[in-house]
Image 1: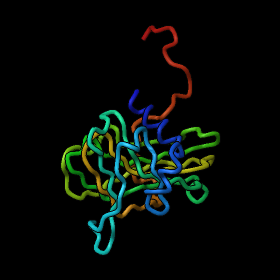
Image 2: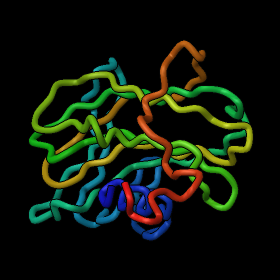
Image 3: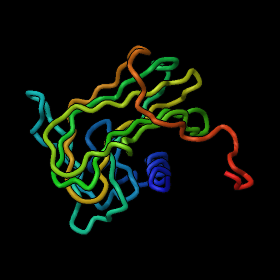
Length: 191
């Protein structure tokens, strides 16, 4: 739970290093995370899609095992409210501590309405290009949708061919639990 909270807080505050984000992020993307200075962010020509580039996050020597760097975007939720949305992309890794895609749906005042960062299914080690999906509901009171990919710990992750699209209710969501409980639990420690 502590790791999930760390991810949540670091991703909620993406503008902590605005100078770094403008200097090295691909157009339309922002650099964020709990330790973005421990990572190199770059574009490469390799991709599973012909004539397409990939983005790379690579750990610098001595990168913290508990920190992470992410490339992310945040958009208005207006065009997606009341629907189910799939964020998908191709990722490959080399000696990755953990690589993950993530998506978060925010309400007013940064209230998290839906969140999945693949924490229960991270990509580790060395892998070939593979397609991954995250599916979340976007409630009618949503204000923003944030999404991206991250590398935690050592190694490298490449990402390419991202898509964000509406899907039908037949496609199951990937979030396994609500981000916040609606009422207090076990206040007397009886459970």
